[in-house]
Length: 633
Image (cartoon, rainbow, N blue to C red; front, side, top):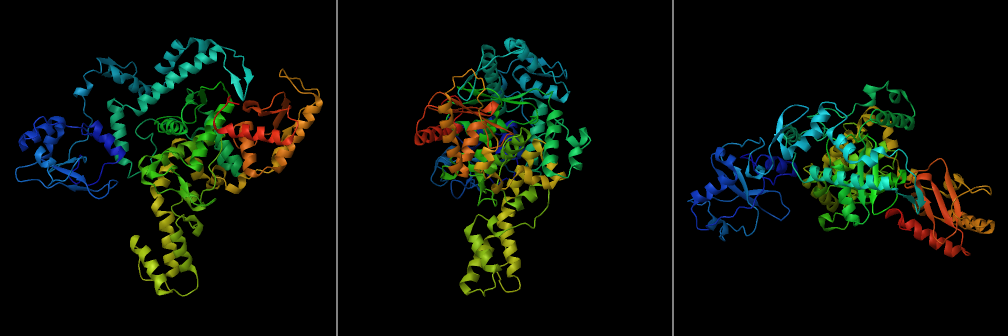
């Protein structure tokens, strides 16, 4: 560690900074376990050259449970630290990780170059944009940022894509054939899909598996990591050029003058997309053969990328599935928002689900999980929410009004409700304090125990009981979740959406609707259905008039008797997400299983069933596949 006062396990961002400065985690092997303390120190200085500037060093280890972050200094023997001492029962380390900090002077965190790890990075190459020289292996990462800083939209990456993807660029017309719930690729589209997959995987590898190697990158990320705790709401674009301007600066700000929140949000979204429509498309490849956990991790990695214009055109490809078009994008955003709503399968905290938001409907608050917080998952959540909104996708529902007030820029909120606290003990204490009944000694003891844990006054009387109830509720809902809220705001700022919430707080109800607003009624579907007509012509094999009437009657019966959740699943299968289009189209075809063309908002129901029970079973079976992708029906 770099500071002589460090006494906690480094955070993820601090570890990255230490690694760049040549002080990252390493496994050091001492050939001679009986070596002297001076030889031991020389070996450490060999692996950590900056340690010689610290005026000595101290060794620390974790105390408490295995998940503790508190470090304790390992007592230094009379002759100094040595391998034999570390292996002895006196030290009691076992296989624990040892942390090193300087003794007299803090160490410099400037990135280190020319180490042995860089010997195979190739010769120096001059950048054709800034004319500075960089190592051959570092040039790709440098160009991605250099060309953006110089305002060049025709980046070398785009040119290379034009050279290597000739079939994709020269293809002026693509003919597709309908199959299942999507459209089968032509040869040109297959080539494009394969090349895009390679490009996306290479880009992800550069973003996640390698620390950016240019000096400007290191200084930028180092500043970000130092400011992470002090300014958690700062955009990840700090230190580099703004990727996009807010619509307020680039347009006449019609959205600010609009009184209707929904129209204002839609105008803002349209303006933001319009000013980024000439940017290079953002692409994502989802492997349908991966497990749900692997898909979730891939989505998180994708949204952890920095310096991305999230308002640029977006396109999703499915590996292992023939579907293309808008329906695939809808499937992707539905997948992302559903994970925010129902939780990721990370298996953290020894649980099967890692819930980002906890509590009851319309009173959801961010989880206090340390793993989610340290992993910047709420920052990712903010980006997913903003990106889905920009693309007209589904929205996160059921957040507490108090949390929405803070996300919208208010310093505090007066919208706190007892239901906002997911902790039952807190609810009981708050209810006890706000009631008019006198407090028994046992009640006062329970209140005092909670107050001691949160550094609140332990004396309870009739004068301060209401004030104390407000303080306990505020601490439970707001104070314990300040960092999570700041990460959410940071993610929304990265997508350009936070500006809308700050300028027009009333639009928070549009971006974060109440759960009750998503109740789907049978009439909401039936009134939008365009039923098949007798003169309709279709290349697909149609049933006779008797079969059509029977199938349509079965379908109407299913819709009229289904509950809201079943109708949501049907709508997701039909159009790709739980958002009503202007019209819903339906056709009757030969077969036993339903199919859907999400791009055309068309549902194909089977006409070969003679009984309602068989029709219902087939429809429910097909609807359940909405979460697994396309083409598997």
